[in-house]
Image 1 (spheres, rainbow, N blue to C red):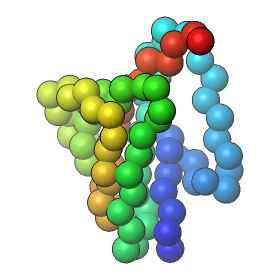
Image 2 (cartoon, rainbow, N blue to C red; image 1 turned 45 degrees about the vertical axis):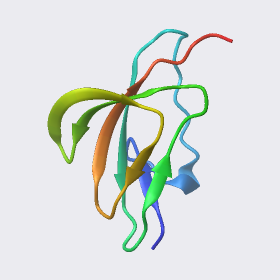
Image 3 (cartoon, one colour; image 1 turned 180 degrees about the vertical axis):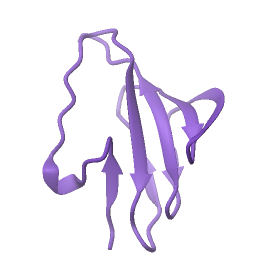
Image 4 (cartoon, rainbow, N blue to C red; image 1 turned 90 degrees about the vertical axis):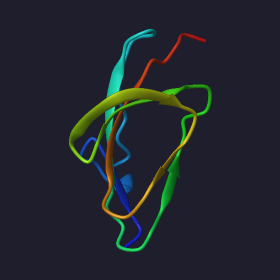
Length: 82
């Protein structure tokens, strides 16, 4: 199976997050694929990684995240009004 979860929702559910400009949004991304590696990025936004596999980590700001099999990452994004 080639799939992933974001905040507990798979791609077929078309999850939509509601937020205000400048609000910090925490996303939990899980690679639920058996033999897949995914690259995650949100154009125009930095990802602040705050947890890996359920363990809090020193926050690291990145542009793109590569997620291996069965890995879980928590990231914070701050969408801006455009």
